Image 1 (cartoon, one colour):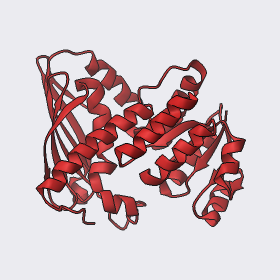
Image 2 (image 1 turned 135 degrees about the horizontal axis):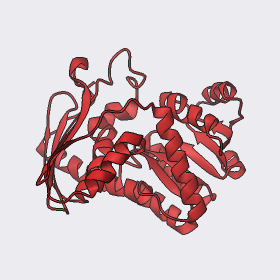
Image 3 (image 1 turned 180 degrees about the horizontal axis):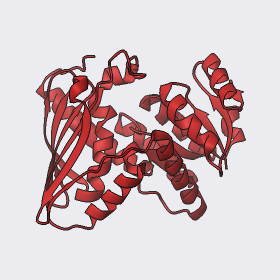
Image 4 (image 1 turned 90 degrees about the vertical axis):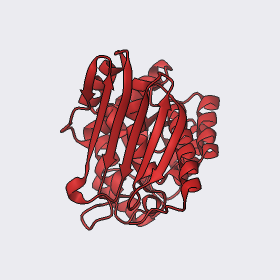
Length: 300
């Protein structure tokens, strides 16, 4: 499968480009970016071609990987689908329901395959743990913490405008939801949302399976407090999300495997664009509650 990359920022450089170049079943055919000089540099690094015109790239490939801010991604993803390209997308799919629906509609109309890259869902240990816990009955509640220190000198994402604008809810919230939903069921209600320090937010969710969950999300936690944790409690006891030493490139490779399988079989991947839309819908509902509670603008 010939695949192109849309995007040239830190995530494209550290995650997508190395994986696309290393995958044995993918022909990394080209790069397009909003900064032509960055596209030229990234393409040269991986021995592929830089495209000045995104539509020319779409015409030359069977699929695209997208590493762009969500609002830009949504528009280009729908365009790529209508050009007949399978989609390896990033989270969040979009930051409005309308944008997300446009992508899903384009995917349905053209019958292309889609996978949204929620990093945790493509880590081997995490995927196995999710499958195991989804088969357990009687979960009562869950607690998830995704705490990062993104706006620091050492972070490659410190200058990310969309993260500065949208904060932890939209950056790490999708990761937490991608693990909780397959275990506890869809969210039937965002019951509460409150601001914490910096861009920190606290959510309370009610799930269709009967359980509740609480989420604490931050990109502005002190470095010593940063980390990820998820704990399930129920009739069978306590289960905790295992730590993983697997790198992000390996996770992207597994996401690409999922896209290839979906394209070959016509079977939708569990993390397809429709799942990405559902995550966006939940985050929009949470954002509305946060807005009603006060301005709470993310602060770096």
